[in-house]
Image (cartoon, rainbow, N blue to C red; front, side, top):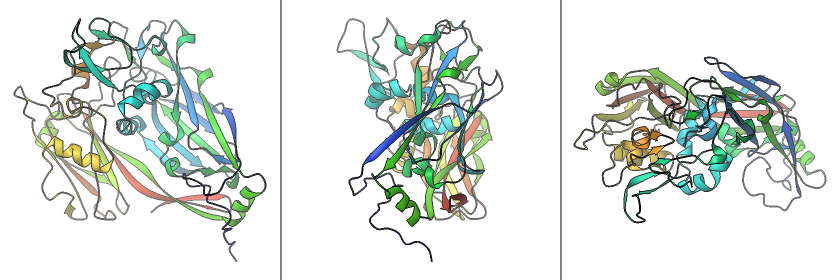
Length: 458
């Protein structure tokens, strides 16, 4: 007979309040990667961490990283919307040889989710923890505390003439290794599974590993100030790359053993993201494209869509993880834009979404409110626009206007049928747009039985 659940022991797996007062002990291990490869100019880097099978893994464990550019680079900084996350290209959480979460182009998804963080939180917290500092303030005219021609990135550092800079402590100088700051990435940001569950490591009889793929050493790991030499290596500081694993133990006696005995067969429902990328062009997008995103026979709650200019690199503020909006003509009129999704022989919207303001509202209903301005989202700011002043010598208006155009919606017609999901998109994006990147969120189930894990799509 299957073991009956001990009702006196709460569910330790769900990330919510436990209705009983328990002694909670946290044991922290600072783990080194068992495999590390720095990568090269055109080759990805890689690292692997192996966890110890003890306690419950805290979903807020951290991975620490620091970067050091070549000695010829004396002023490098992180992109405002990604921080240290721009280094990570792919993230995998594995139990045994089963992949629980696997996300390609992870930094692109991270950028979309980061837009949901308030500006105040970025300025006062994330700037120091993760390197994200997307915050805004008025760009006041010289000698005035009331008149402003627009707004700019505000990281707490006063404007130097018409140029804003990163704080001295956050500036990466290749000649001063000891001054290169270390940042962290939260485990729950890397893996959606850990947003809602804690892993009971002590109940798993298979190795639990985390694998990260890094961007190549040139062009995409950092941004550089104006006047710096381009296409130089930026290396991950090996001694600073660590996994800070927090293992949680509940109770003073045998509560965890009783929980394991009563839960020999556990199921976890969670989401994962499948990235679908298609090469395209600005002319093709302006004419309108139809792309099949796959995902047949899966439960897909929502999708996220961006149009990207991949050759934006270290000489820009945002790098390759941008999201370009339709262009606006000299009269301030938005150019061609239409968005719709078709699956199960039905369009999600009875008429195409052809207004960027409505697209913003649909995205908000699907995800949450993105804390970006109208000028950043759709390049339609009129009364208040991004300043023409520079940030580290890079013009803010041309680097930020229309660079946060995140599209996406919920899918309301049930499980996806055999034909998959069709994206119908028309968008008069700027010249140079060359990639359509979509993230499909789909539901998966993991089953832990007698210490062994199996994973399948819901």
